[in-house]
Image (cartoon, rainbow, N blue to C red; front, side, top):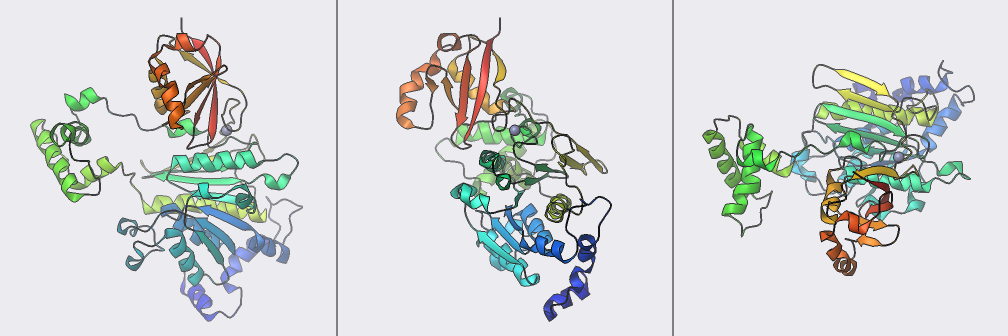
Length: 438
Ligand SMILES: [Zn+2]
């Protein structure tokens, strides 16, 4: 922000000097603009009348809120359930030391409002699951800056479920940004028309776990020594104490155990902060990656609202809809079309074919859903065409169906049978057609 614009805001003289360059984009007919698109005053009004929802007020969210406000959006809502932690302050620049412990959504909203005159930001401090379809229906589109796959899957399933073919307003585009260290991606989802978060889930497969035997016998990396202390040594020596990731004494104990083991195997590099990172499974956050991805998301938002340029995912379904960015090894970025899947449990309607070993127990089968990249279900319940095989979400049903866990699949289902797999946390039901391996 240069000095003129800051002074401008402080003066509050009502002039639009601050918006000079923005006004130029929306007040002229550009070569890529839709010819039916309004230009000039009307276009400016359109931008300020659009109601937009931002989900997440953390690393990406702070950037997104600031960018949207400075792009001319004036009616912004934000949802975040978290409170501010001192470790957020290096990159979540809307927060100060004195804000630690307060709600992110509230503090972020007030900060941006105080700096950008004329913008109204309505915070909600709570979970996205607290809100219903009527709430989400009021927005023109949703911008997500989340670090949780589960929350993404929930909002995606909700927006796809809201689409009513008779009512074009029910289609709410979802602009989704995500970062991990030096890598990031931004994408636009037009629910039911383009590939959705669930179609793309296998691109975000959980990192493969290190096999227990490596940890127990031949560690090769400092992280293996920390995992060993975390998973094996703690259980052997401090079984009666519940490990608290936030207790410095506990982390110090793990650190010292890991360090000793690393020395025994001649592995350098174990540190206290690495121990903290491994145990808490912290994803490294880099402020510049957040800034780049948030900028891309907000450009898409601006293009949606003004029609000044074609957005990612337009025209559906064949347009590029997915931008990926990597700053790991110099810089690389690439935009491609991620195709919708007919067997997507959210936006498709075909059952996915799954080859299974009929000698597996139901227990083994249930556990495999946590690992399957396209499912990633922690507490799946399973129904066959005829009956409930295993139900985890209701205690009495769990007890009733528990004996099935020890049975072989061949006793419970027939070759070619369709099953439904669901997880209460996600409101998504997967359809699989089971084919026996011979
Ligand atoms: Zn889908």
